[in-house]
Structure formats: structure tokens, C-alpha cells
Image 1: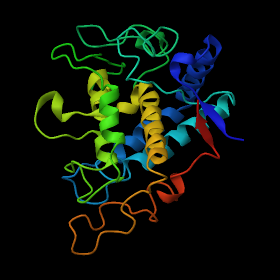
Image 2 (image 1 turned 90 degrees about the vertical axis):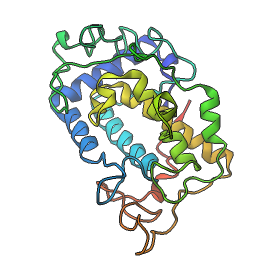
Image 3 (image 1 turned 180 degrees about the vertical axis):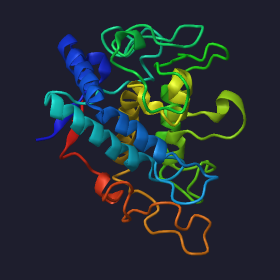
Length: 288
């Protein structure tokens, strides 16, 4: 039977406690840090050689869907009642709303060094040292709203801009495309400043701190954010009559993207699974 992922704003006190405790336990066991390593290893940009799977490519959505499923499985091995909640950043938009509460993810970082001082993931609690990182600090950092140059979270209109796209993705299948649901959701825009960050990317920018790096998984909000992104893929599929992942076939040998992106029926590293197999996971979970 499929389990249910809930809006973080609807979680009971007990559900929040169980979710936090499961995260802390897999961190204690060393399992959590492996998720950070994987994300760092698979964060490849357009300018790098070789296969791109996690970002700036059509497989952005199925890659993170499988990534979330692996984390969720780890949590459920600790407590079978736990599922990943999602953060609706079009509704909960302030630095003190869900999920930035002491009983869930804790609050903003302090002004001097952006160190998170409240909640269960604060460094002084002793349970959330950053062992796998790309910066020097061992503590979780946030700069909600980007205080030195304030930006706002994406609004419902930004989601609609992405959801209205009829095609999943378009050539050249990278961060430069201006059409297609995938990049409009992932959020690589043109220009400079805040206009170059849309939807998914803008949320990373708004949270700041470690969420700006390839080690963004170190902030547990990563999972709530990506669960909401995953929900939008589901909404897009329903709106467009079950429209499929693209490209359906690999780019040819003369194409600049040959060997650099994953087609619908190709294996999606680091797993033995294809994007096609991840298009419908209704047998595993559904959203409330």
C-alpha cells in the first residue's frame, strides 16, 4: 500500500518529533553523510565533460526522485511511520513560518557567520556536525532571505510559468533552454541577479548557507524542498495528460549532448533504474 507524504504545515507534534528523530538517528549511524557525498559527486555543470545526471539535464527530476526515495527508505528503517514532508514555499514564505520552527528544522543563522543556533540541527546540540562539506565550517548555516541582497521565494505565478509548459524538456537539454518544464522548474535563467534564479534554484538561494553549495544536502530542508519540487512534477504530468520524460532517445553521435545526458530508457547513475521507471511511483507513495 502506498504511503503518504504530507505538507509540513499539517504535521502533528508527534509526526514532527518522529521525523526529526529519524534524521538524527541516520546521521548518528553515518548513513546521512553518504547522501551528502553522493550529491557532491553527481553535481556536474554544463561546462564539465562527461555525463550529467543530477543537475542541468533532463534527469534532474527523476534523479532527485530516486534520491529522495533512498533517504525516505533510510528514515523508515528507523521508524516505519515516517515519510518525507514537503515545504510549500509558495505559501510558507517568512523566516519564522514552517519549516523554520524549533520543533522542526530550527531557524535562521546568526548575522555574524550564519550559524544556525536554534532547533535540533544547531551545532551546539552536538548531533549535526557537518562531516562531508565543501566549506570550512562544521556547523549548519543559513541566511534566509539573503539579508545582504534580499530576494523573495518563488510565488504561485512562478510555478504556473513552469507548469504551463507542454514539453518536459527541449534541446539542447541543458541550463540554457528557455522552454520545457524541467528547466523552468529547476530554474536556470538568463541575465544577472535574482532574475537568473527561478523556482528550485531560487529557493536554494533564498535559504543560503550550505544550501548554496553542492553539499546542500547538509541542510535537512533540502529534502522538504525537493519533495515539493517532486510534487510539481506529478502536477505537471496530470495537467498534460501523462506527458513523458524527454528525450525519448539518446542524442546522436554528432550532437554536443551525445553521452552527456540520460534518455528515457537509459540507466540513471548511480542506480540501476531508468527515468521511465521513475515517471510513476504511485504504488510507492502519494501526496496529501
